[in-house]
Length: 238
Ligand SMILES: [Ca+2]
Image 1: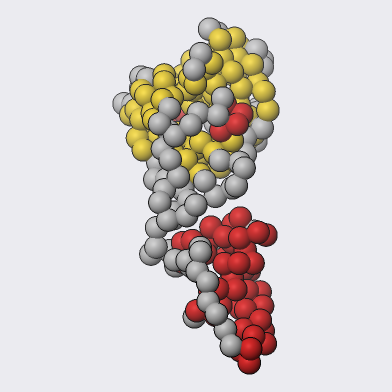
Image 2: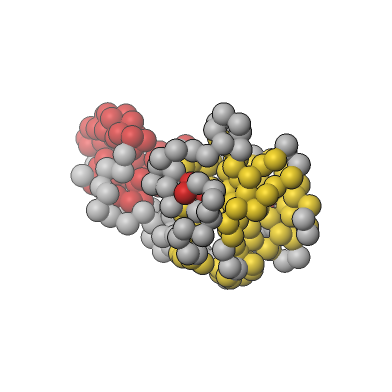
């Protein structure tokens, strides 16, 4: 599909970072240039526009070729693991078992760190809970967190921590959780000191707490600490 590929990669490069990412996953050559005879120009434009419309919509729904690697998102790497069942008497939803980290380079100008907390089970969301991934960049300790209120409604935030003082700064770029206990939180690197590729994130750890009155955080479970090195954008897309 060389005509469509040429047109797609030129249009999406300047207009739609998500579609551009999908194009990279499909193997569309970024710098490909194709010459067309004059009689083929009209056909080229018509075919390109038509296919772009259908394809761009589909690309937002699902990766059109999931067998190809997602070249703009690194595979999360395990930083520390933690024993199961050591959160008792608190619920399994706050039993940390692993902290992983990675990068998301799909958003030009908003490169992100991704932290994944794994707990034993979130089939039932605990009320008034806090799930933090903490890490240190330079001399500053940051956290990204999922918080549940008294009704188990969930929000996400990030901030800094100095000793026992936790200061919420603002919102994450994205936060999701799944009933299998996977909590995924992405934050723009620019919000946490802009660590470059190769820079260490030290003291990476996870902690779960119970929020008592919004000011006191009672410890539930915590992991040991590890170091994670920020990885560069994978080859395949510039
Ligand atoms: Ca645990």
